[in-house]
Length: 383
Image (cartoon, rainbow, N blue to C red; front, side, top):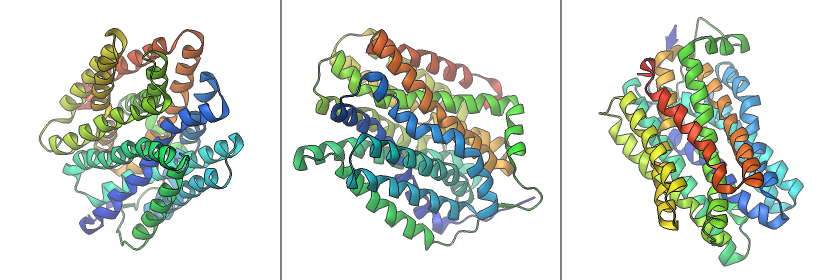
C-alpha cells in the first residue's frame, strides 16, 4: 500500500534541485579545456566523461534502495553536498589528478541527486501532471547546462581562469541544500514492502521496463556524446577556435532548454507516445544535417534540431515507466539512473573512432542510438 500526499508549497525548492543536477553537464565544456590544458589526445579526453558517468552504474540502485529507508529529501541533500565538494577541488588544486578526483565525486554526488530528485517530484505533483513537470524540471536543468559553457568562457576571457565556474556552482549548491533542508515535505512511503537489490533488478524481467531502461542508456550516451564532441567537430571539420567551438555547445543546450519548455506545456495536451515519436524523428533529422550537409551553418542548425529532439526523451521514458509501476518508482528511478552509464560508454567509443578514423565518422554511432529510440517510440506498449 502506498500513502501519498501532494506538497504543492514544496514545488519550488524541489524544482530548484534540478539546477544542481544540471551542473554535471559542465563536463562537456570542461573536457575541451582540460584536453587543451594537459595536452590530451581525443581518446584520453573522451575518458573524462566516463569518470562522471561510470558511477551512475555503481550507485544508482543502492541509492534507490536508500530512498525508502532514509527518505528522499535526506538522501538528496547528501548527494548535493558531495556534488558541491567536487566543485571546490579544481579551485584549490588544478592538476590532472585533482580533476579526475573532482569528476569522480561529481559523478557520485550527481548520481544520488538524480536518483532522488525525480521520485521526490513525483510526491510533490499530481500524477496526471507528472510528465509535464518532468519536462519542466529538465528545462530548468537545461537552463543551467546552457549557462555553464557561457560562464566558463566568460571566466576564461575576463579573468583568465575558466575554472571559476566551479566556484559559482559550489555557492549555488549550498543555497539549494539550505532551502530544501528547511522545506517540509511529506514523502510517499511503501508500507507493505521493502526495496532490495533483488526486487529492483527483478523489474528488468518485465520487457517494457527493460526496453525503457535501455532507452535511457542510449539517449544519455547520445546526449553526452553530442556535448563532449561538438567542440571537436567544429574545430576539426569547420576549423573554429576552441573558445568559439565551446560556445557552440550552447546551441545544443539552448535547443534543449527551448524543447523542454515546449514539452512542459505540450505534454498537458499531447499524448506521450506521439510526443516521443516526434522527438526521436527530429533527432534523426538533425543528425542527418550534421553528417550529410556541408557547411558550418547546416551543422549549427543540425545541432539545434538534435537538441530539440533529445530534450524530452529522458523525461518521457521516465514518466512512461513511473506510470506503469507507480508503487515502485524509487526502484525504477534507481534502474533508470543506473542506465545513465551510457554516458560513460558511448563517448569513449566515439573518441576511439574519432582518433582512428575521424571525428565526423564518430557521429555515425549516434545514428544507431537514435534509430533505437525511434523504434522504441513505436513500440506499442510504451503508450
